[in-house]
Image (cartoon, rainbow, N blue to C red; front, side, top):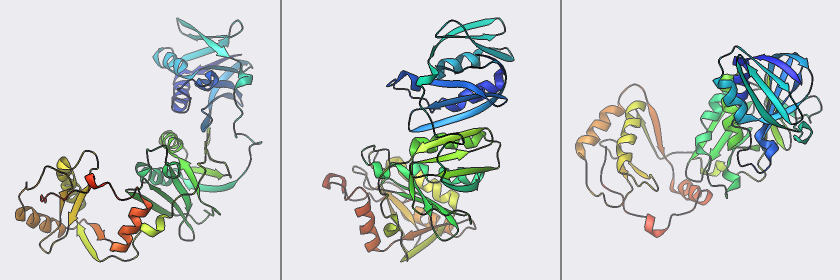
Length: 360
């Protein structure tokens, strides 16, 4: 195996696989990137068996062959050299030379036959195809990923639900039992018979891939076991999470008893100020909507009466009357009880403290 590639192209290709390769060294081959000829260049493939990526880089192939090299070491070497072109060629058995200008490196290679087969290429199982704008998919990931549970024992909350909302819409939903994020986007060709759950790591890597993608549209292929993203020069897959996503519809209020409209920036600034005294463990805030205005109190022990009181409420009331608005709804008690059932449950008595009387 021997090929020549532009350093800049190789750096970009190796950057994309860094978050995919296995870092725990459970299997040494999973820490490596598979380098093999593909069309008019080379293909870089990496996986940890849960997510996988294959990117094609333009290169001049002089001798065909496939090798696997440590993904992190190869990326660090190529990133630090200054030559415009990099040459990779097989040396004696089990070694690969990296040549760049006056620099020469030798890296251990593992047998490419031991690299796992991934669902890429024409032989991969086909599924439901959905064409979606790259910017739309990026936005949907951004607005749901933050709400995914970080508790690995709650596997049914450790991913983002993907399905259909209203007819002709694509929906993503995420919750950790305390908060819920939902986003719908019009997509007439999106027809998903049964919703699926996509893992957090897969979406993080997909988001990074979409940042660097030059494609205006992305093709999503949904099969019973995985979701694949197909771009012009890159393919990506993530294995689906098994299990049932909780019924999120029961915690979304159909009607509201109270509505308040507030300037978005002022609303965010008030949340930041009051969160300074919120519990570091729970970060709970108590919204208040008296007739004189709206405010928040931190649900935290040890803080009982701090703040400007009526002056803050009058300031909040003036802010609510500005032109750029956020709507805050107070849901019925029945919906609030349902939300506690779907979430983590009622907190222990030690955490159910009286709210402090500080409003802003």
